[in-house]
Image (cartoon, rainbow, N blue to C red; front, side, top):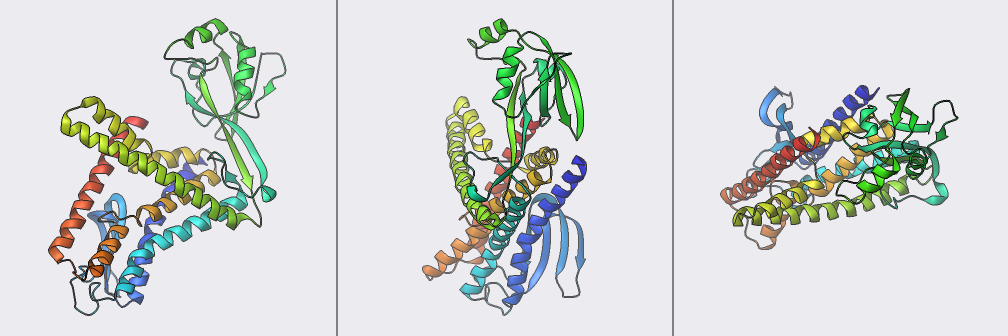
Length: 389
């Protein structure tokens, strides 16, 4: 089941790229701008086909997004049917269409998830309390300390803990993460049976917990230990009915705020990284790299997140896809050169100043932005590889 969900998650992720680019595609054609190519991902090309309508469909190798190539994309182009010759209103609609499509997709998915069961993943997560019903509450294994009793017993992240107890006695149910430390403390130093669920199968492991003396002594060090050696996490699903669209809007606003906070940390870390590299301060450079990449993920990170999500059920998987769609909308409205928002703001500013950019200058700005963007993705991918492997 988890493999199937992972495959579905990857297909849906690719679908976000298609939906985004389809927004540009349909609005451009309706605005009288000719489309030359509709591409999924970035070149080099893996597949291309010329359509009867005259535009090319392509699938490319670099999973960094997608593109719609329009005729005469420079603001200085004047030939009929080109992007440059279109009115400012049409250009603005074309560049904002991808953002609109991703935002609508995110709201639609969050509404569906609220109806099916919304994972509670954010502190004080937005919900309409009068129309919110808790349908699932599980305790999952989060972080596992290397060499701990949990690690020796073969536990894995996302295993669902259900009961724990001494052999031959009735086990104690684990219904929230705060109960686990209390129960393991009462069984300190003893061999217990740990009941858990993995991939839908109920399992049993015998675990000898650390004794109280060892745990207390470790708390005075830089590596405190637990009796079992895991960090548990509550996994709850809340279902809404009439308020599902309201929850979708409220949660999207909440996640947007958190995303901007993460971007602020990432930009601050990037500044430290650049300053550290320029001054030769190795510590500042390392701290900057860690801060710049802590709240973001590249292609490798997205795959690992989808893989983890596939173990937690379709609601969690859809939540990830919806959040990625929302993030794409946010990123593409920001004034970042080479992205939709950057091109939109450059066009608006140049038109406001009544000094249209030359094709050469426009290409230079977008190329510089694209180079910075690719460099950041490469940096994040390196960090993701170290983080997950």
